[in-house]
Length: 188
Image 1: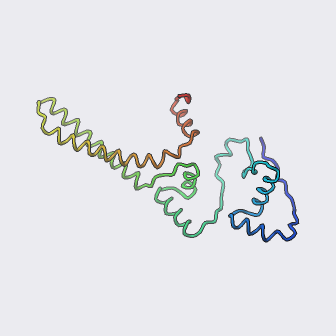
Image 2: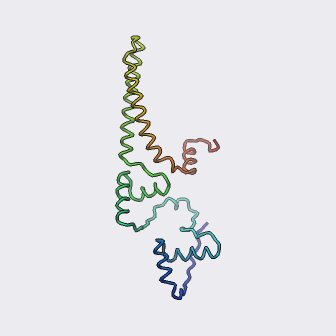
Image 3: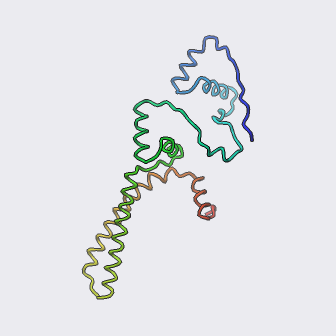
């Protein structure tokens, strides 16, 4: 389906222009957006779509430049948070729009370090268990197993924080795509 041509209208507001402009500014909208919303309300129609519909699936994934105006303090927070995640401003905003905020790099690095430590501990436990099975002793295993349990719980606590930050935003579509990529059926 091709995009519909734009329809333009020139309107004599007869003195309503300043009020319309103030209304739009207070809501951070353009005058055109306010007028379209008002006309849709009068016609009892759904608000018009922001973007024209395109039938080209490749066009949906092309980059488009978007200019936004933010208060300086908000722009600073955007820069700081996107940098902390190791993402560009656009990629960071995309994660927020998609409802899957990216965890900070420091948190990911801590999770990776914790995973590495847990792997070392698991290797040590296997070694102790192997030695005990060969010589029949059992004293050192209790201490080592307790260390393993402590490390495992610390790792799981950190991993659950990362998962909690990322998982709530996963949409049904993203879950279906993940299942399809793994070759699973979606009717489970």
